[in-house]
Image (tube, rainbow, N blue to C red):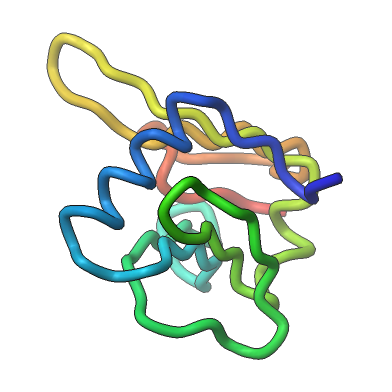
Length: 107
């Protein structure tokens, strides 16, 4: 069982990023900053770091940074397409606050 839930739409989007960026992994990290205290950072990467959580995708892996793992445990990750754009939606039960744009959160 995985530490996070990844919807089919989010998986498909990550797989598209892997194909487009020609990198084997898509990684989610939690960094200090943003208007609510912490922020999510997404990037395509070439290697796995020690402590990263690995989730298999059809063409690579989704990684969660080991340092930020405790902040995202139980999270649901989805990919939303709307009229004015698309984005990764993170529903984090550990967050006690968040900013309006959904890019940062507090615990």
